[in-house]
Image 1: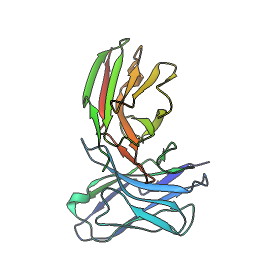
Image 2: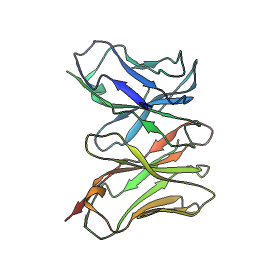
Image 3: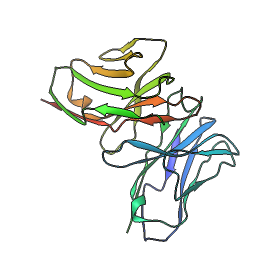
Image 4: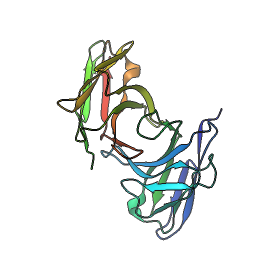
Length: 114
Length: 112
């Protein structure tokens, strides 16, 4: 099993550009989520999904869109990048609900918006 | 909403000594409390977790204690080793929602 795979590992965007961060898992996990990690602020939840076709907002959803068309994939879209979105992004999945089972994290995407 | 406070933000201990990191949470209905370790440049990985029906859990040199009355839980690392140097995050579940709230993290440094 590859676990949770994120691409790309690094990305530089100009303000206003759009892009999609990819996340795929091969563990048949129903729950998937996106976090951003900023210095001194821990991991903050952007969006999450409890199954294909179902998504919901986390703590910091503004500026990001998600969709869940398959169990395996959960892409995160930045429609118009802003410098405030410079961060490290982690995708995570788990077999149970997102509030009572261990999260498996991907290796992260380091995004810089200039 | 749920708030998780983690202290200290940085911690430096001598190799072989113990380290303790404490988290407090606000939602009395929280019932799942995991701890994650993140080495430099790597992804967070679960090291131990505890549920609200248990007061303490141990795994070799790592233990977690939970005080539901005071709404705090702590990570204890004994006989620290250089490979324990990392950032540690606590988290707490949110009642009625499928998500966790994370603390701000503690950077632990083990001095040889």
